[in-house]
Length: 263
Ligand SMILES: Cc1cc2nc3c(=O)[nH]c(=O)nc-3n(C[C@H](O)[C@H](O)[C@H](O)COP(=O)(O)OP(=O)(O)OC[C@H]3O[C@@H](n4cnc5c(N)ncnc54)[C@H](O)[C@@H]3O)c2cc1C
Picture 1 (cartoon, protein in one colour):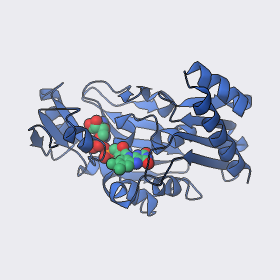
Picture 2 (cartoon, protein in one colour; picture 1 turned 180 degrees about the vertical axis):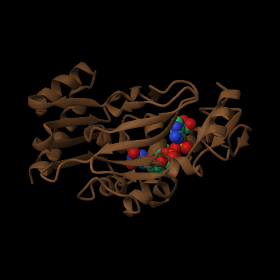
Picture 3 (cartoon, rainbow, N blue to C red; picture 1 turned 120 degrees about the horizontal axis):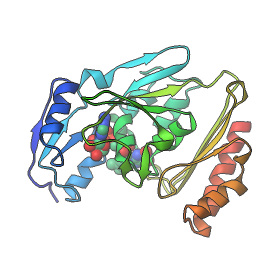
């Protein structure tokens, strides 16, 4: 199928993009890499009257780093991160996550901000960046804010963004040099969304021991400190409504992520 007709706005900067959104609130959608929105348009699951293209905006392509964190513009592609064209938080953690998303054609266009804003519970960035303690930095006419990714999606394909609010960047704290990291996702074939996924950050120098389970049907399940065990994960996932098979797959993903972190 083809999308329903829409107007395309190509603003020159973030302020113009926000203005185009505000003038057409409820009718306009932001278009980043189009790797999630494109299929939804083609299937006519969404029929916005206007698309506001943002992937080319300089403010969304900026990358900065300091001793504590790396800040990556929302329109930076998975491929740029996988290729090491952006600074990493250490040990190629971000590059390896990006490299495991879909396949090259999708990575060339798909963006880190678009992935988060799509709000898919099984997205790689949502689970892993939540484990790393990252926040989405937003921009709106009334001022920006930092939304911790643990609270960024409120349900499947629903985010905490206010109408007209745009994600400008993602701030990812650097783990210490002694930190242990593990990530495992189970998918039937490469390029497919995961059926189970877990990320573990064990960073005693920063007082962090955290596991995050994604692909759980809603917001990521976050376990801290002594709760980082497959048993505690099983309890949390039962509360989240997962059946026994899904809980088993998630427990295996968590055990493998923990094993990688220990190794
Ligand atoms: C075949 C295929 C396989 C895939 N496999 C995986 C996978 O294994 N793992 C994975 O994690 N992902 C996977 N994806 C999704 C991919 O990572 C997408 O790139 C990503 O989900 C969306 O990014 P995008 O830049 O294309 O956003 P778009 O599709 O352009 O936008 C997605 C949504 O976010 C909104 N949006 C975009 N940018 C912003 C912003 N800055 N502020 C506010 N709202 C914004 C849009 O309005 C839209 O609602 C796959 C996609 C395809 C097509």
